[in-house]
Length: 151
Image 1 (cartoon, helix red, strand yellow):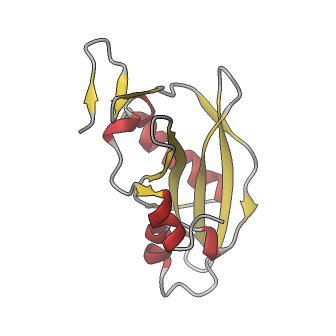
Image 2: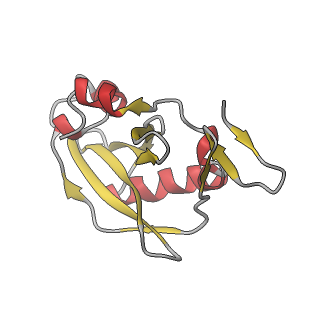
């Protein structure tokens, strides 16, 4: 069960989860469907010509990598969707979890615009301050490997 201590520190299965209150991301780069999360692939199913891109996310204080934004854009419609993903290691068991938000759709000017809109939505809902509360699509490493998502 996921709980919060009284001082606001997030706990995931008894392991503290550091809240991210300030992040930045690098430039978007193309990536292949085999590396995409199942939920992103489902949401773009049937969209011919949708392009997939990803941007690495860094913690503003430490500069450490803390996830990525995966984006799919459909230039013919002007629709773009994006999701935040983070691979999390549970130190006590060595289990790796693939945490992903549901894909969110927006009209966009350019792919970076999709990232900015997804980021704003997540900040507004305090996602980065409460990471352990948003584990709807978490997979174990074995599940991710079975689905071909870990390479």
